[in-house]
Figure 1 (cartoon, rainbow, N blue to C red):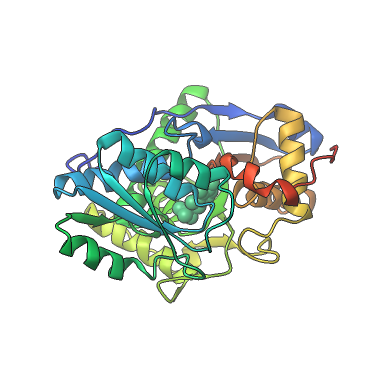
Figure 2: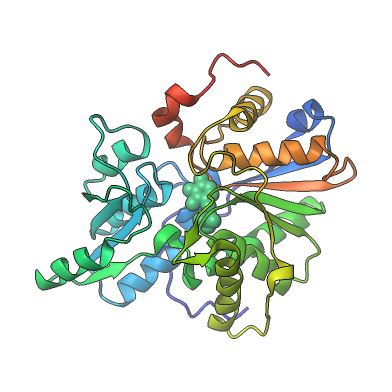
Length: 333
Ligand SMILES: *Cc1c(COP(=O)(O)O)cnc(C)c1O
């Protein structure tokens, strides 16, 4: 695979564990369920953005940046991991967060502050709309600024998930297991685009099933089209001759509910069930929703007992603390 010439900065501890969730599977009377533990990537409480940042920050350093800037929601895991990566390398970090400043910082925002980054409050603009203006000001002040794309979902970010796929395959082979589905939370598209490309490159037969977390669009392009074009441009980046079209994308939008970050029964049940059968924390925004989707697909027979599912845990648990009032903590499974 032709990407070892691409700059990379080590930020996490890999490979992350691949485990089997026997008690959850039993509770659902369902198929074998495995979990890829990217909540344990090792950078500042972990998550899937650590992988993407290894390539993106590698590029920033290669280009001589001294300042990085990115954007996200107030409880963005991407922003928290970016802030930690910047701190570890002595880079200035600016975060553009889509909210009004809350009275008290909690969850990911609390951690952003501990990492000492500069926070810009952007109101309703949670996808980086305000970045160009801030970059212009920083550049005028003599900074060499590098923009980390929203959610880390550029070709470099997606490439990290081609690499993650390779990591998974080597673990799977040594466990002598097979999978039918890979299920995960999909939001800015980099994880899904990378896994789709990895699946194709390794000639693997899995269904790559993204659970859509966000009703929205990215850069004014519908999310499904963005993800497909990202898979294609990532293939082009590494001169791999693969083309994806609409029919190659499995993006399940049945569980978006009231929209991004609105916690309902689906998420609460998934969080409680996974915690109480496996001792594993999911998060309220991404993995709780994705696991809720997986549970529903098992119950409704869309995923069958004879299947073998890999759930990719993408992190996010630090947000639990900020969602305390939306979580049904008295819930017993
Ligand atoms: C960002 C994020 C995702 C979504 O990954 P994308 O590559 O943006 O689709 C899923 N889970 C968690 C916890 C995240 O922080």
